[in-house]
Every structure is written in C-alpha cells, then in structure tokens.
Length: 234
Image (cartoon, rainbow, N blue to C red; front, side, top):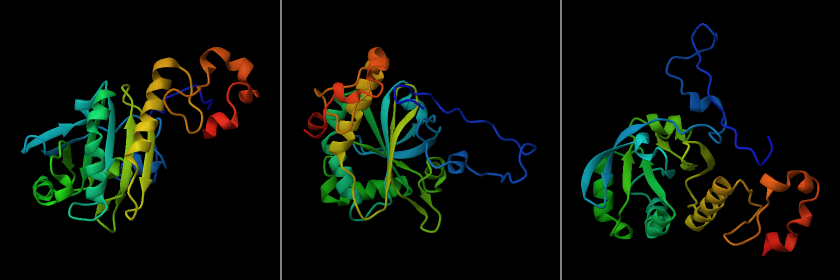
C-alpha cells in the first residue's frame, strides 16, 4: 500500500452461512487489529453537554463531513482522566479553528459525567460533550473495551471528512496522551488530505512536505533529495 494512496478498507458483510465460527453479536471491529482506513463505526448515545449543563443525544451522524476526534477514557472520578479532559478542553478553540470537533466517551452514565464535571476542579469551565457508553457497546465497536474491567482503554481516533479513520492511538490507563501531538497530527492529516502531498516524520506546519502527487517517479529511492535528516529532526 503506497504512502500516497488512502484506500478505504470496506467491510464485507458476514452471514451465518459463510462461516462456521460466526458468533451472534460479535463486533466486526474486534475481528481485526486496527480501525485505520476503515469507516468510523456508527453510534448514538446519551451525553452530558458541559457547556450548556444539559443532557443531550450525540451520534456519528453529527460528524459526517467533518474532521472529528473520538476520544475514549477509562472512567470518571479517576486520576489521569481529568488531566486529559482539561488539556483537550484548553485547546478546543484551537481545534475549532482547524474545523475539528471532539467527542469524549467513557463507560460511565450521563449522570456520573454531570457530577464529575461539577466536582472536579480541573473541569471548571469545561465546554465539551461527554458521551455515555455504560453497556460498552460503542467501546467494543472501536476495539477499546476491556471485558474484565468493564471499561475502555485510552483510545483516540482521528476521522477525516470522508468518515474514514486515519489515525488511532490506544494506551494503558497509567499514562495520559499529548494534546499538542494530536494537533500536530491533525495539521499533517489536513495538509495531506487537501494537497495530495505526504508529510515526513516529525512534520509540523511550515516544514517541507513530499510532493508524491507530482514527483512520484523522481522521488522513488531518492527521498533524501527532497528532505534531509536535519530537516526531519529540526
């Protein structure tokens, strides 16, 4: 799969007649190791809108044609989780300026979300919507559900306006994620999506890109003529 091509992996519908080991209710998202290049799973759930203080319903339909980050975290009233939510909230204006929306999700109820936001000092002035997935159905669809714990891992998914997941990051509960790195990746993905160019390692806005859309033959086996190690590491 060449790095200049973003080909969507379409799911094949499986029937009971096509496989002997079909398990009723098994999520297709769990049958492969990654959702990258697959379409975002469809969902609908209750949520708490911290900006308005009201309960709302959110769904995948809300994000069609948009850049969106789907961000799972393990649980309310824990320790690393509020730091991640607060960090993301602090960058919401930056993300909005990029045309990016954020949907946080955990397996707590909407009632727990409300109380969590009201009591945790780090979440003062929170403007995000936090989705409630108490059955774990949506967490299973995204492949982050931990059955033995009854909660989700820290899973973060970047979805492009075509509804395709282009990046995912899943980490264990003990370490929080970096929102600045998320923004860097979003800038890179937006540039690649809009121009057809690709972004080398460590790429940041304003740095050199690789014009595979125009120079594919010249660049083959000769990437160093377009970008140096110093460029990459600077």
